[in-house]
Image (tube, rainbow, N blue to C red; front, side):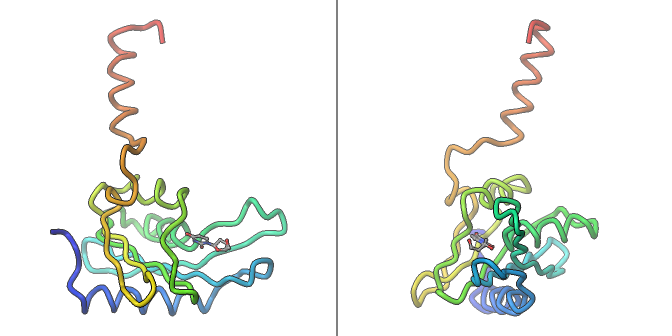
Length: 146
Ligand code: THU
C-alpha cells in the first residue's frame, strides 16, 4: 500500500497544523492548513485564503499545491489537511485539484480521534481526469467533426 508510516503521516499533519497559523480567514474564522509532501521529500505548506467576494476563497489544499507547483514540484506524494474541528477531509473541489497530480496521492486528515490515510482515488471514485481528456482528443484526431 501507498500509505505513509504513522510517523511520517503525523509529521506531515503537524506541518499542516503549523500552516493553519497563517490562515487568512476573516469571514469564516475557520483556519485550515495543508502540507504537501513531494517525491523528493520536500514539504510545502498552504493555508486557506478568503476574499470579500466569498466565492473567490482558496482552500488550504489548493494553496499548498499551487505553492508546490510554483517551486517546480509536481511530483506529489501526499497531502495532509488540518482544521481545529478534527474533521477536515478535503472538499470536492480540492479532491479534484489533488487528483490532477496523480491517482495514488495519499490524503491525510483527522476523523474524530483517528489520523486517516486514503489515496485520492479512494476519496474520488469515477473521477474526471486528464486521461479522459486525452482519450477525447484521440477521438477528435480520428474524427475532425468535434
Ligand atoms: N476550506 C479549506 O481550506 N479546505 C477544505 O477542504 C474545506 C474548506 C476553507 C475554505 C474557507 O476558508 C473555510 O475553510 C470555510 O469553508
